[in-house]
Length: 92
Image (cartoon, rainbow, N blue to C red):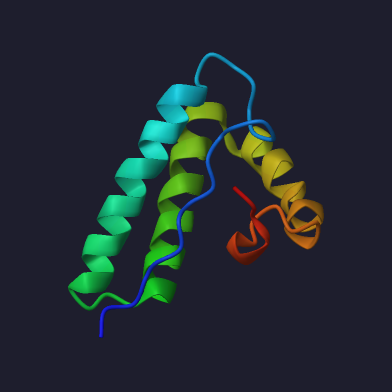
């Protein structure tokens, strides 16, 4: 049986309000497609999550430096606790 994968949240009313919103939405769609393909080929979602975090952080460090990336990451605990990354709590 093929399980239904959750949809990624969109960058709508509660998301970033800048000129890059459409590009970020498109990027999320590409990532969701790649993620789903990898899972369909047997890659565990936890492995995908760890690899994605590493790739994202490495990209941010390369683009903005270690200190700026560390500052950004330091805001994540409160955002995680607030449910910002909980797909089950997202409403569309």
